[in-house]
Image (cartoon, rainbow, N blue to C red):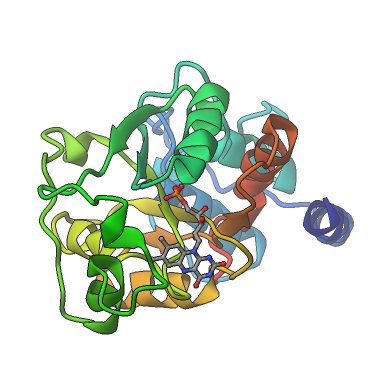
Length: 250
Ligand SMILES: Cc1cc2nc3c(=O)[nH]c(=O)nc-3n(C[C@H](O)[C@H](O)[C@H](O)COP(=O)(O)O)c2cc1C
């Protein structure tokens, strides 16, 4: 909520400083669905950065004959926010003991997204994850950066998704190696990837860095670590806040 308040403040300042005038829009200007590129384009326009193809676009979503920060908010909502009819979002997760799965299910309930569970071709037994045993399978895998455990199934229609929530437990401070297998199995260059994890206490930052290095990702949003018993409201607040994070790297 703090981030949202800061963002709102920035928006209001931009708004008062800048009464954006829309470029002359061609009669056949696009009114189709918006994408992350449109969000970036309009955001750049409002920040007076160089932009592309503006005469071909109709970014006046609220119909007030000007392109303003309010249009940007509406566009971000359309692109990112939960929507039962949103069919372009996929929640992918790996969960050995069910904690990450519970968070993934909440995200699915909130967003109406499709879901895919990453399962290992050779399933992890209880012994495999007994991390007090230094030679258990999970520990061996985490000690080997190049280990890529095989995934049991693949996602046939991966290309049809724009937004991918990617969930996993923290194993020894980072994502399990099977997540690395997943990241190297698909093309993320036009996707928005939103990592989330559960853990005893460790944060998500090392995994976020690894994810960014393992795959070429269109837009990677800031990830979020949850405790195993995070409630639906906590997850909803996070999902609702995500649209302010779009293009944070700009
Ligand atoms: C092999 C292994 C290593 C773990 N390493 C960490 C760790 O470094 N930090 C931490 O906070 N929790 C660690 N945990 C605890 C898990 O992250 C936590 O229980 C998580 O919620 C499990 O998610 P899951 O039920 O979806 O599999 C580890 C668990 C296992 C099995």
